[in-house]
Image 1: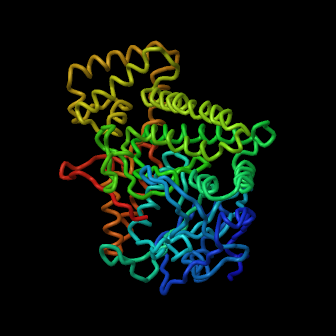
Image 2: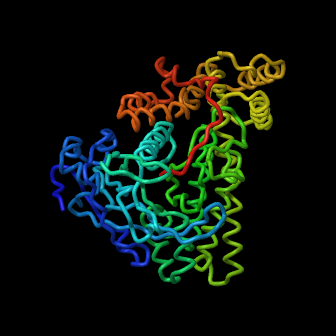
Image 3: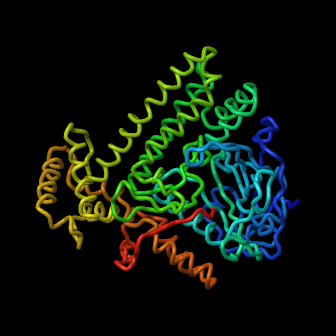
Amino acid sequence: MTKNNETGWNFENSYASLPNSLFTLTNPSPVKAPELIILNDKLADTLGLDVEALESKDGLAVLAGNEIPEGALPLSQAYAGHQFGHFTMLGDGRAVLLGEQMTPEGERVDIQLKGPGRTPYSRGGDGRAALGPMLREYIISEAMHGLGIPTSRSLAVVKTGEPVYRENVLPGAVLTRVASSHLRVGTFQYVAKWRTIEELQDLVDYTIKRHFPEVEADENRTQSMLREVIKRQAELISKWQLVGFIHGVMNTDNMTISGESIDYGPCAFMDIYDPETVFSSIDVQGRYAYGNQPYIAAWNLARLAESLLPLLHDDQEQAIQLAQAEISEFNKLYHAYWFKGMREKLGIFNEEPEDEALIEGLLDMMKKHRADFTNTFRSLTFETKGDAVLFGTPEFEQWHARWQERLDRQEESRESSKKLMQNSNPAVIPRNHRVEEALKAAVEKGDYTVMERLLDVLSHPYSHRSEQEEYSTVPESCGPYQTFCGT
């Protein structure tokens, strides 16, 4: 066990106060030759951690899983989940929660190692992770943070010096992930299916205390908690849709109670606008396509509500009615968040009845002419039509005239509208070919400068800096993109 005075680790272990059935104490497995690949200096600072100490031999030993920092109580969490609609027992198969860091601002965040070896929930796996997927999660999670989307974050990636055997032999790595918590819909499903009502109550009490203290005094605290989770997820999914993000594996074990994006496996950002876009190699039916994400979120939340039925009301019929009433609000909430976001992307401050037709008209044209999602809104922001086929069509000219008339009807100035659009339409997203370019350079050549430049560009996507220009286009040579579950 290492001392934490120099590094700044300040652990508490509230999750370990829950019933033992919810976790298993698990130490990471040491690795041979840890090498620090990337460290998130700014995140470390907000966590109250000393960057120089993290980069030291002792700091590296913690990030690699070779040493346990003082105050930590490593454990792996048990949970279940619907994976592509099929329910199964799961758990942290290659993750170890070191503990909860108490930040200088008084916030409590999980510090989790991803890829530190086998756990009791590994189900035959080796518990390890490959360098490429861990760097991918680092890039995407930090890009999401830059876009203002609630997300788990990445503190560090450490190369283990050991091979990982998949289809090919790959370099191994450990990611240090930071999240508000790792409580999932699947956590509640596991307890509801295989544990007692008393344990379910313990989990609900813990969740409310940690994430929703404002509802502790409510008469039906479980219902209030469900309502708040639904609100957070409605807002989160709307933010995904507004930037063209496709998660790829929206299983119930990948949906957090806190409302953060988590588990970046076969995720990607949409280039050409098409609601049927799927990138994941395993999503052959398109269950988790871009256009389906709001519906899947509602489905997942219905599974959460089912798990909470025994605590919603003593009478099952009344419990079901309460659950249905809350779930029925999701679509309305999601649409309100998404609609507001789309108006902002078009520089519209207030709401008029015909706005929805205006928005849908643009999206229909974008789909018809295979327009780039991000660049279309970027072009509208700066009134630059570029080379997109969409902008040369008569139907677009008609739409554009309607849009200009709409802007003229609001009190705010055109300059204010442009500013709103700049703050709502990113100049850059993690373009798939750029992410692959960075990963290839890192994994195959040991060149991390490509990734570092990409991360810098993605850190301020709404700044519309000139150096972002080269990262905003997709070469015609880029064919269909496919992602794979590697994290």
